[in-house]
Image (cartoon, rainbow, N blue to C red; front, side, top):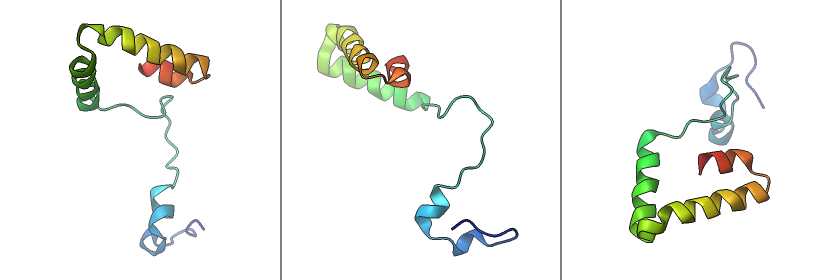
Length: 75
């Protein structure tokens, strides 16, 4: 249950504390940290070499076909 006005957040169970909506005004749900972008790029190149761009396009297409437009945009 959410805390009452003036309530103590420390009294909430941990899962509830982590899921409180802070009412972000951003239109983006979440930004991917730049370090994670570089990690994925490195791993894709390591796994697929010069064909990494093809694999990325395939993954984006799979996500689009499944209706995950945000996932498609990320890939």
